[in-house]
Image (cartoon, rainbow, N blue to C red; front, side):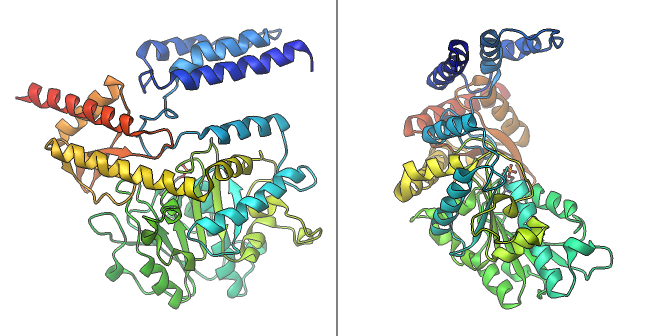
Length: 456
Ligand SMILES: *Cc1c(COP(=O)(O)O)cnc(C)c1O
């Protein structure tokens, strides 16, 4: 490699390290001036290429300040994790490898790392031992992949090969979801031809979990989607639904984008009791495990259903006895994303992962306690990492959310919970420390007091 190429790569690495060092001191949301300066990107495509070092410099000068500091420790918006440093470093190295992780022959190392992650993930998550694991871009794709396997299995049991024949004229599949199901479940159903409107929606309790006594009749032609971790409350659907649905022969899919990780915590794993009896699971690496985007995980009890739905060409099956990654996912060519997961899990270990999950839940309790002490209302049962707060009327709460976002110490999003505007605090980052919680609570209370004073 010539000197210039080395300089380009090292310059990017140094800028990245500086970014991550300074991010703790910066406001979480970008300054208005930084967003304004994004107009600098709006250049015409040059006739001859520009200097590479200057290009990386440009990206850092105008790009870095206009980021949301979500990888710091005081970003509590949506459900978004940060990047655990060893996972980020592994991501850099494996990006330099530029592997096509779709086949063993195009990347032996990716295939082997996927197999190792498959074993590790099925050991610590509340899923079936020996299940098959595929590495996709996020839970939207993980839900899609798992539901494709479900569709394949149910129709195959009815002598209908859906991969070959399509859905026209196929026996119907009954789909049961929570009324609180994440939008990505409906997107997956739409893409799979199962339709997002022809589902049965099960009513939920006050914490957004499916009501056991409101479940419809189930049979072996049914897919039941449960949710581990409601995006608002963090509430976990009861494993009793899995037990009951399995007795009726239904396929149970668990959307556990973040909540499935509760099963990796000694303190919290009571919440995922009996989840391992389900047929498929979807979870994210890029949320609570804190690996870089994009990183989703699909898990399927029976390898053959996943294979049949994803591999298309039976002649590839087990030809070589090695893992052929594309047979587990919709994509063929893709990056070696399991490398990030491998590095996070190897450096955290079982105890480190348990600690990450348990700690986030503890901080959620701390937020709830401090805000309640200050006189504000907590709207959810804080069981995992999500806290919903009301600061009074809907207008007042909305004003407090905007004030907190603008003030910059931390960032939270707003939501609507059972008809009320709420501030949603999600603690999903490895980087969050007790001092971040204290500092953020103080900022929230100060903003809230200002809003209330203005109203008086
Ligand atoms: C975040 C989330 C999703 C979507 O996951 P992506 O990784 O953004 O595709 C689905 N379901 C739940 C419960 C989520 O929290």
